[in-house]
Image (tube, rainbow, N blue to C red; front, side, top):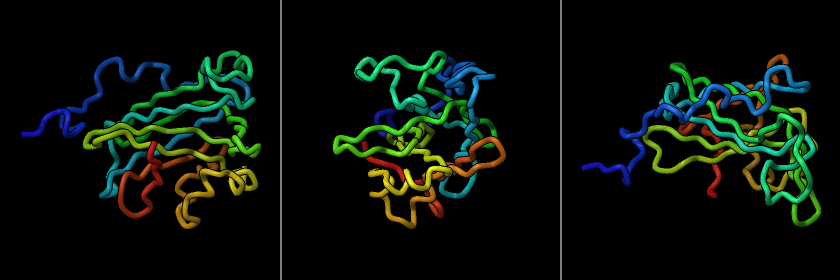
Length: 184
């Protein structure tokens, strides 16, 4: 017999309150410099996942986190740093945010601007963690210690694509073109 401790599904369902109305909005509509990141979550067969949750956590444009352990000062007004978007019937999600600033590394270097992403969905035994990197940051991306640790032929799965004034980032849970996920 399958129990909740063995699998997220079939017990995983989007309970009321997990997604909330402004969850996808890390910044409010009309915020100068705001960018929308859109994408689709696909399963191993290439089918959209209609009941996933995408959570994002990121630094502000100044490279600071909305967390008391970040000693580098106050956040920008209206910047929450955290977003949560449920996928729709076609597996699509949307996050409105600002481009994050680079983050310092212990060795004096910098991580490229990126968004940390958690994926929750039916059938997953644990959350999946990945990153979204900006496509216009080639130099910073090349020097990023995390992205540099990913095999070169897989790095493209972590870099969003510019589509007009938005970014597009699909998440593939398995199979051809599988998104790189990190153990945390």
